[in-house]
Length: 175
Image: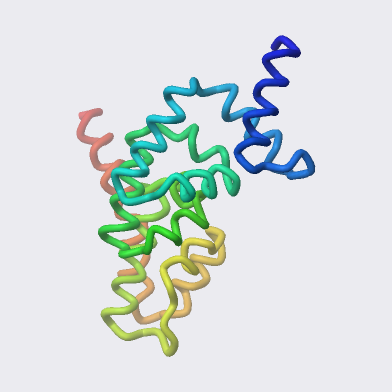
């Protein structure tokens, strides 16, 4: 990259509120170097269709610039799920944009299903937020499931249902 182009990117990133001392500086420069200004604006416009403000867009960019490298389709599906199904406030998504980078199919929806079963059966003494459950590592989440020995099989089936569906689809294709 030409030095002048890099200087322009650094200026844009600094103008967006990212300090040159920030660990996000490199990620922000990388993101802006991968996207045209038009694509970046389109993603902000997408966010605005869900009620996010310009300030939300900047907060999301400052916290996790990589979220703007996610496809529009993935971003839209994630926003729809978190706002309409999980009933998150848009400020939660703005403050934790990494959620929009998580796999809906492999992580978010399966964990949501498990938590819904746990809540419907009133298995928790204290209410766990879905946000808290999403922050678990895979091992921590499996440990969470194992706390319910009478229901562990049902919970694991709910959690791994997408894998079973994928495997059965592949078997059908191979026959």
